[in-house]
Length: 254
Image (cartoon, rainbow, N blue to C red):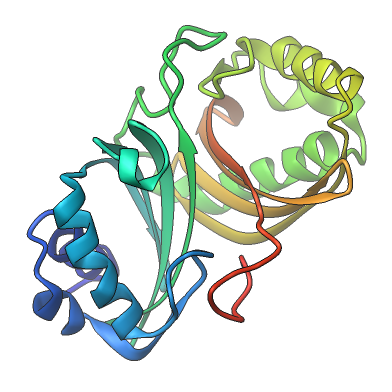
């Protein structure tokens, strides 16, 4: 199986079929877990499967992108009250090694009833295109992350995007919406002082970046996905959450 096929098979076994033995066959024994609440190792994942089944939670995967040994799933979890909210937006990142899934990172965020832009947290285009422009698009997005989100040269924001369709529930469309929202957060005391990419996965027109951030002296994780078209960033999705001080393992968030 390709890395995408392997990861989708695992996701189906664990979250749709609720078959722990089928899931076990797809992961390494020393499966490395970064979800703060799930124990590391294959047994930690196996223990999660019956809890998901008992909760009645369902999952819909909207986007799948991969690069090398990394696969990113962009999904919605519904009927997820047992895990914190009626509906959750999620990014899951998996690393494949020797034909099995060896490592997992994720971020989850409750989906609000309304958003500033009127767009949902997971709707929009899903087709992977422009495979020949993967590296070019990755470089563009990483420049945007460095200059705009990381604060190296925020005045360069307009050069990266002319149309910026926004799926962050608190931000309006456009680069102006991003800048206005960031200023409003700062006025409320939420100031980003660190924004460091840890995982980057690009495939064609989609570029995913998971970043370790500090917001008002507290650790946060930002999982962002951008869509690029004709050399410009045109659309953005994200899932953002605070990083807890205590986890059930020693692997850290990243």
